[in-house]
Image (cartoon, rainbow, N blue to C red):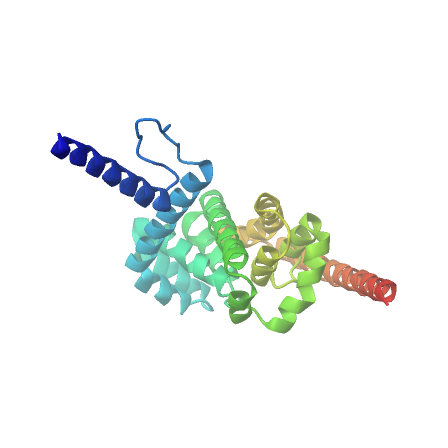
Length: 273
């Protein structure tokens, strides 16, 4: 009788210990006699799949790190980039995707060559889809890194003065500001991903701003790669005129945004004093 009681007692103790162990890892417990089964929350599922996606992405990046790094060293030579992508055949888009991912996160690396090369190698529509998926996904990753890791990490990747210059404006202007920042060539586009992550804009709104803002330049650069050699002088002149108008308009808008922001800050300081 005593042995049976001790056995039951030991089994109960073991069950409690297992419940505590699993509860510390996931919000789910083994069902006891009078205990309801607790389901895994949506937050835990998201974290699990996010962690799994990060792990798989990391493995993939590690496997093709060498060709992607070699492609980055060719960043200034469009013809060399195109030839390099062709040499990888069906794996070329994957190598390009990794290179664009690195280029967006390391903000000072110019990325326009990759977009042009993709148009030259794969044709306009496939390259446009590939370019948009790559640069938008990379932007969201940089946004998420800034939001998760905070300012200390961002200051290692982005110039501090530039970060200070745009952070408060982005915090107040939100969706409109980041859309304009991606459209106009006067903004440090890749750095704005990190600024967005530090600001209060939601991930969904930043994604929408990234898609809308990056699409015009992606179309133009992909077209140059796909049809550039076939463009007439008038077409090149139109492209140049549009680029000039965008640059001038951007300078004017930036000046107005900064002036408005300066006035707002001065007003707030006067009210506090």
